[in-house]
Image 1 (spheres, rainbow, N blue to C red):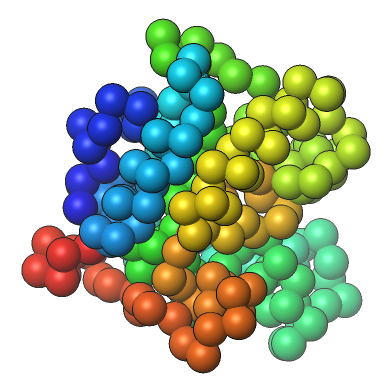
Image 2 (cartoon, rainbow, N blue to C red):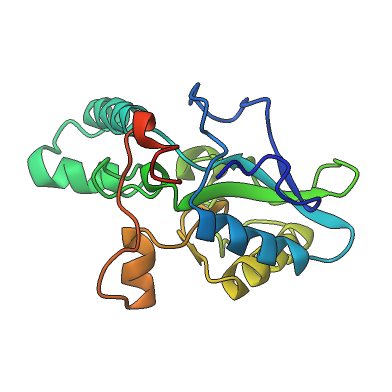
Length: 204
């Protein structure tokens, strides 16, 4: 389901400046995910709205992210290989077979003022641990009080709507993927990965 125009309290960053995906479906999600996102948006203070940066990500893009980051960490940690390297990479980039974005169940988003103004969230979206000195972690102590308050607003809205957060990325929320199932104590995920050519056919 296309999230663009779905609700007045949900905006989509059409600039794509913060993502690498060039696909047509970057702001699409599963229908139930979209409904829950509307629920979250409605619960925000009246001066704020959600800003969606990326939802669906193709398996090809997820594969390239994982492969590229593997090369980076292999360079930075040459003593790692095999399972140790895979585990290290997986801390920051989800393996294609388990990633939430290719299922249409994960969303990277932030808060924005209703008039389009910037909201302090502590870091730019997609900042990593090294470049943010740990401030990318949702519960980081290395952010301002204002940023912490804003993250709490986002957390309360998204959590109440059924989403779970990936703790090293304050912006990453999901409902129905494998990570959500683990965190929520569910026996299995609701959604599996979808190839880009299948998106509209399976009502992502």
